[in-house]
Amino acid sequence: EAGVAQSPRYKIIEKRQSVAFWCNPISGHATLYWYQQILGQGPKLLIQFQNNGVVDDSQLPKDRFSAERLKGVDSTLKIQPAKLEDSAVYLCASRGPKAFFGPGTRLTVL
Amino acid sequence: GQQLNQSPQSMFIQEGEDVSMNCTSSSIFNTWLWYKQDPGEGPVLLIALYKAGELTSNGRLTAQFGITRKDSFLNISASIPSDVGIYFCAGQPYSGGGADGLTFGKGTHLIIQP
Image 1 (cartoon, rainbow over the protein chains, first blue to last red):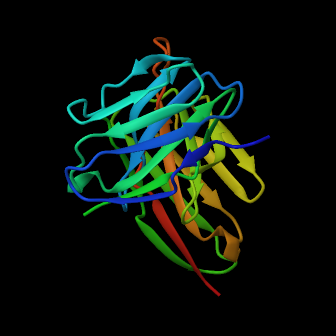
Image 2 (cartoon, rainbow over the protein chains, first blue to last red):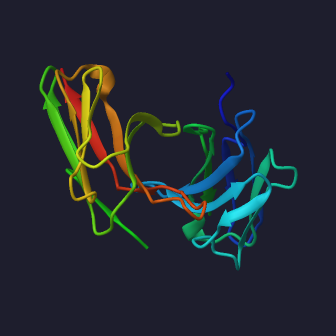
């Protein structure tokens, strides 16, 4: 069974630029999550989707972050414009009976 | 938001020693989970606990869901070099409304000296 795929694995941008991350969940998993993991911290939930609908986005900084899952499968997370404090690993997870995490995208904002 | 207090922050042990780490919360969780994260990878689930008082083992790992539903511990017996990594506790709320994202602790960094 293929795992959760994420791309790119690494991204370096300058502050005020835009960036997008992509996630392909495990086939058949209706629930998808995006987490932000700052260095030295545990992951923090940003948004949860059930199929193509948002279940929880209470911790998503909506002034600069957006996410979509238009067809209920792949998802993209966008940051526009990026700030220095957005430097982190962005993890995607999908859940069937159990949740599995992707390898993450490491974002560095200079 | 909710926070989980995980301790210790790091552990330096000798190979073969037993390891114990714990997690406490100010809020009740419906499920407690323990994950391990290796560098450059996402967290991998080790043990999931679903009932207060539950004690569950997975090989050399044993974890318990506290009676108060506000704490959990993880023990690793007879540590080996591949146990090196960062261990995270995570709590999952009751998901009656569908929102069941995890709240993570800050992690315990396990370092094993040969």
